[in-house]
Image (cartoon, rainbow, N blue to C red; front, side):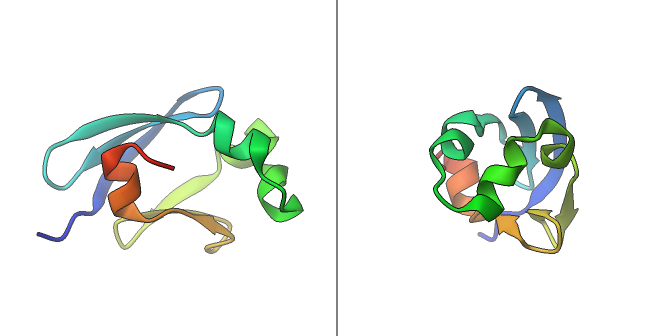
Length: 80
């Protein structure tokens, strides 16, 4: 089964609620990932105004034309 993201809502801080094509919902907190990132291109998303500017493209969540993205299955399983 191919899983995609149908909907993603910014909840607050660094949390996003996902609705997947199989009906599963998952709340993901990206704060640990961002705070521990070494790459400045990733760390810049600690700016909440930038973090909130994600989009869903072909069933995947992306920031700034794939500057930051995550495997859909990892998000589906709650692992980042």
